[in-house]
Picture 1: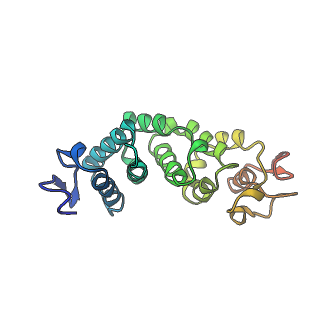
Picture 2: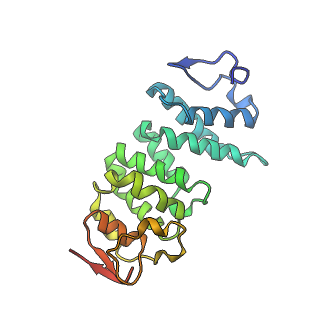
Picture 3: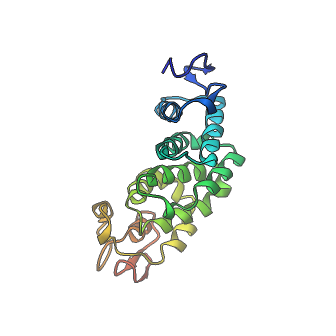
Length: 214
């Protein structure tokens, strides 16, 4: 890493992007994103700089043959999303789009970005929680992240969960079906049904046919 970051700026052991960042080869930039994503602690000032750098990388688009660079930038943003300023958060959400459109490879990072921003910017929370709930029927990787890492966020926006989980596709197609076997569903288990039950919002009759409160 020392060779990659010649004469780098540094804050509390976290290297900042070098001044000639755009001239560095894609593999070096991707490696730097992953090293930052793996850091135990990234100071706020350094985080803000890396967020801007990763956003610019995504906006520029990955050159031919360097799709991995965009994935590395997204991983860095997933780690640092809680440090986003409001303008950075809005820019990031607009850039990545709804979680339901994420590829399987990027879906977990996508979900973590939305959860972190919803947690730190409550005004954006309802729309982000709705988008996450809409993705549950179709994204196994979203199902794997949202209940285990996002319960504190979801409980702050019960109306969004209730509205978006009025009906749901049964979870037979999900590899993570076992995670959602809550025992409160009749006729089949579904992600939205079990999420409602977990948050005390009532289940869905028949695994998706209607709402059963209580």
